[in-house]
View 1 (cartoon, rainbow, N blue to C red):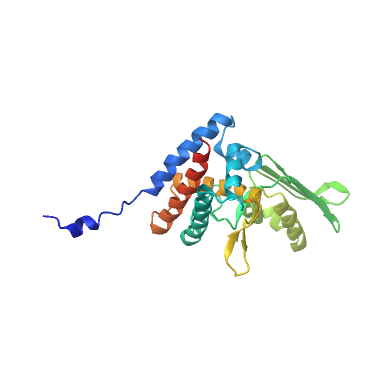
View 2: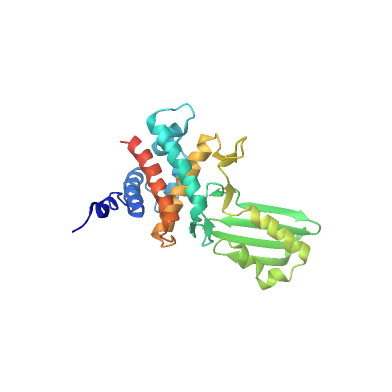
Length: 257
């Protein structure tokens, strides 16, 4: 016959936060699909990050330092716990261009509006242009476009592919360096952090609510991608991440009822 000790050991309910997060994401997906008509989730996420909307607005309301309601206090606590859990779990995703990226509030990718980089250095002219996903690299003699040193068209931005191209390697070291410098300027995204250190050297979120809200939307989306693409190792550390990701997203959605 089971003893009371057997029952005491079972009183803590172990919630599957991976499933809980997916459930709350389905609710979020249902809302944004009713509001936006873009084809892909990524396109919608970019609009949510960059435009005024109810979802982003509620995040900024909850982040307000003067908002001391129970809901705001709970949200900020869960957000801080999510940040700490991400550091311990080191969850990665290949959502951005197939490159492995650790999901973190300290390195958040945002769209780079710059699509053309060009200029002269010594006797050489460099021009890198990104059109949608395609990237065209052109290196020619200054004042003589017909004298081409290097020309390369890519289906997507990929610095590694550029590095190993045979014609690129035939350029002089100086030309390679200048070409790479211009190439980096049109990277589809740039990295920003929404964290800072306080006077006691503690890691805290910056005070710019618009940037933080943008970061929260991106991190939640990347966590969704990593989980759905099977990139998450199901251990205690990652379970903590999805626990607080669930709470953060649920806190926002409940404000929208």
